Image (cartoon, rainbow, N blue to C red; front, side, top):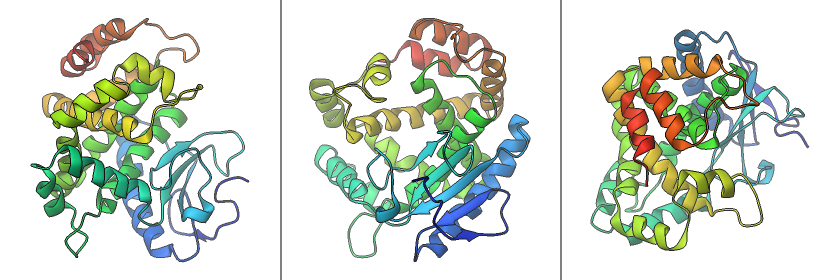
Amino acid sequence: MRIGSNLPHLDGYPFEVRYSKGAENRARAAADWAKDAYAYLSNLLGVIEPDLAVVVANESDWNSRQPYGLPFFNDDPDQIRPGIIVMPASRGSFWVEMGYDLRDSSPEEYPRLLEQYPDGSGGLDLQPFFDLVTIHEMGHAFEVLGGVHLPTFWLSEIFANLALHTFVATQRPQSLALLEVLPSVGATSPRLDERMRAEGHTSLEDLETYYTGGSEPMSPLNYVWYQYRWQRIAAAVFDADGEEALRRMSQVFQDRPGDNPPVGGRIEIAELLSARVSETLGRAIELWE
C-alpha cells in the first residue's frame, strides 16, 4: 500500500499533508514547520516547489523498515507524490531506547537531556527533537527532487543535517538548543563511542555497506551514533561558512551525473568539499575515524 494514500488530508499547504486518525494536531504542527522550511530552502537553493507530501502516521499506518519513531524520506515511484516525508504521530519505543542508551553511556550528561527534553514527570521526551527532524527530511526532499546528485549515502545525510541546522540557525534560532543538546551529548560520549567501535560500525565505508541493506544491516542505534556526529559537523560547517555552505553543496553536486560519481573514495570527496564547498566540511570527512 502506498503510504498515506488512505489517510485524510489537510488543506492550505504548498504540499500534500496526510495524517492518521487522531493525529490532526500533530500533522498541523509538523506541516507548519515544513511549510516554513519549504519556502526557505526553495529560495536558498533555487528549487521551485518540489512535489512532495508530509505524512504523519501512527504505528498502525507506519510502513517502513525504519523503526516506528524514526522519520524518513521516500522517493519510491509508487508513492502518493514523487517524494514523501513520513513523521511519527506519537512517541515511539525507539525514542525510549535512545534515551536509555544515553542514560547508560553518559550518566554525567544525562541531566542535560532531562532539562532540555522533559516529559513533565521527571523523565525524558525526545519528541521535540524529532519534530525538528521534519526539516532534515525536507532537506532530503530538496536534494532528491532538486537534482542534487550526491555520490554517497553518508554525504546525503550530511546534506540533510546541514539543511536542518541552517534553517534552524537562520530562521528559528530560539530552537538551537533543542536541536543541539541531544547530538552534543551523543557525539561526545566516550562510553558510547567505545561500545560502537567494539560492537558496531563506525567508518563511513561501513555505513555505505551496512545501513542500506545486506545480510547484516546495522542497528538503528548504531545509525543514530553516526547522526549525532554528522549533526555536530553540520553545526561546525554553518558556524564557519553560514548558509553559503549549503548553497554551494547543492550547486556543486547538481552539476554532476548521479549514476557515475565523479570522485572515488572518502579522501577524494573530502578534497572536493574543501575546494568547492567548505574547508571545515572537507577536513571533517578527511579526519573521520
